[in-house]
Length: 99
Image (cartoon, rainbow, N blue to C red; front, top):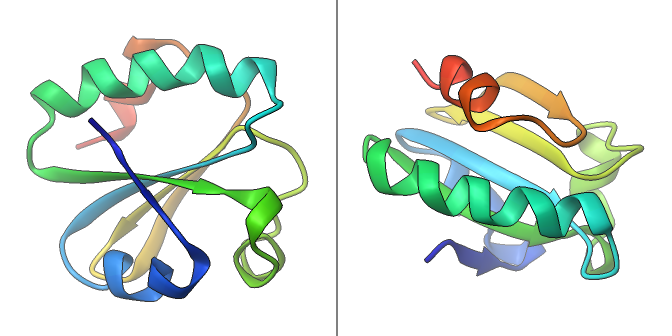
């Protein structure tokens, strides 16, 4: 199960290790389609921590990272943004980004 975080927790969860953050909204169809794909990947890519962030409940994260469309996946390593992926992607596309 991927843990949903709030904006106040964002900086803490990304600062150490490899982290994938799924920026989504509850009303977003493609976001709902992406969720089970990420759940599946999270079971095999155990070197990554997986989180979800509802962009409707936060202001600074979407502004800071230029999130204009959802779903947006942010991939961090030790607090540094390594990759931004916008839109619904296949399991293999996402797995290829998680090195």
